[in-house]
Each structure stands twice: as structure tokens, then as C-alpha cells.
Image (tube, rainbow, N blue to C red):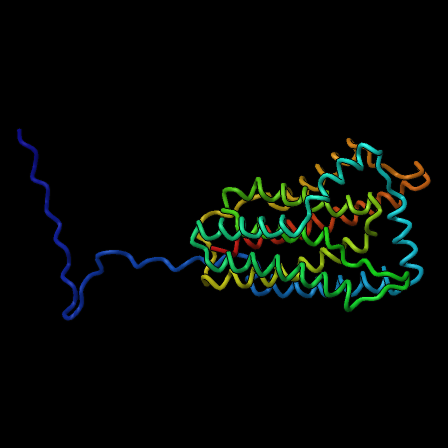
Amino acid sequence: MSAPPVPQLQQTPAPSGHEWPTQPPAPRPRRPAGLPLWAHGLAMVVLAVAGMAIVVRVAIHSTRGFHYDQRMMESLTASPSGWARILDVLTTVTDATVALCLIGCVVVALLQRRWLVAVAAAVLIAGANLTTQVLKYQVLHSVGGSNSLPSGHTTVGLSLALAAVIVSPYRWRPIVVPGAALIATFIGAGTVAGHWHRPGDVLAAGMVCLGWAAVALLIAGMAGRHAPSRPAVRGLPVAALGGVLLAGLIFVAIGVRPSYGMVTMAPAVVALGLIGVMCAVVVGWVAVVADRRLA
């Protein structure tokens, strides 16, 4: 017995003068949750300016604050072998190193055809380091005499670290972010452990870098109006914090310790804690914005 014939469905004719769409309309780019790029940039600039004003007022314009900043620096020391290892890192911060790292960041961005990101990296590194030199030698004056705020070594290390975070492809960021936080923390805290800089100098350098990172992100964001369609990389703030904690473990392992044991434990912990929190927040914030707002 043969199967009954399958009835043929006929498409209802479209009204006169109209055609049925053959494909559904393309979806509009999804608007990402959270603050837009310009709001993040504005918040970074406001925090950088306010943070710099507070650090300057407390660390170099107040006699009491200056002496406590000095006390925090003197509360840390390092064994001879530990200081030798820190010095090995600090002495790599030269004009040639900055130039090579700048070229490397620009090349990485250009290989991805991210032209504005390459410009942003150059602006971040050059702007942060020039600003630090002008503030230190031309603008700011300390109640303690010769001014050392902001820290030039910290500015170099952190600005290069943030530029690397911005130019890195999103697949690399889970590795680049903790590495950037590790390097920035090691250099900043190393200058304090070696008595080259007070903690306030390092914090001021972080504010300089945060302000210029905001400018760099806004420049890079001019490439497109919409956030990337790919999924966001999760855990970047935690990765930044992990890099900071790893730097702290390295410091303990190489012999960085309070100068007089428990007597100077509290100011030593405060000094390293402030530097660590600053580096984790700055690197983590820039990493999240770069990942979620830049194409």
C-alpha cells in the first residue's frame, strides 16, 4: 500500500509592492554592561589628580607626613644578597631599556593592525615619564629639602607594564597582567627597600601612570564605538593581585625584612601594603577596561 502524498505548502504571496525578507536583519552590536570608556577614563583622571594632591600634601608638604614617610622607608631593609638582586633589576631601568620596550609595544600593536593602540602606548610611556621629570625637578618642592617625588624608576616600570597590558592580544592578558603587576611592584617596592625612595614617591608615580593610562585608553578607544564581540577575559583583577603577592613572596625569599624586627614591623607592612594595593588597583583596572572596551 503506497504512502499518501505529502501536501505541498505554498508561501503566502507578499502584499503588492512588498517582498518577504529572505534573511533576518543583522543584530545590532551588543552594548556592554558597565561604564562606557569615557567614564572609566574620567574616573581614572579624577582619582589620579586627587591621589597625587593627597600624596603631595602629606608626603612632602607636611613636616609630620614627611617624617612618617621617611620612617616607613627606613623600616625596611634587605640582606646584602637580596639588595644585590634588587639592584640587578633596578639598574636595567635605563633610557635604552625604555626605548626598546616602547618599540616592542608599538610593534606588537602594529602587527595586530591596531594603529591607535600603538599611538596610545607611545603616548602613555612618553607622557608619564616626561611628567614625572617635570614634576620632580621643576614643579614640586619638599619640606625635607631635595625633592624625590615622583619616583622615576617606578614611573618607568609601571608605564611600561600598563603599555604592555594595553597592546597585548586578549589571549595573552591572563599572562601579561600578573607579569606587569609583578614587575611594577618589584621595582616600586625595591626602590623603598633600597632606600632610594620613600613610599610616597612610589605612590605619586602610580598616580602619574594612572592618569596617562586613561589618556592612552581614550586614544585607543577611538578606533571603534563598540566593545569587542568576544567574551571578556575573566579574573584579570585577581591576576593583578596575584602578581603583587608573588612580588611580596619574592621579597621575603631574597631577604627583604623589617629593619629592627617587630619594632618596625607595622610601618614596614604599611609601606609595602600601600605600594601593593596601588599596583594591583592600577594594573587591574587598566586591564579590565582594555579587555572590555577596546576592539
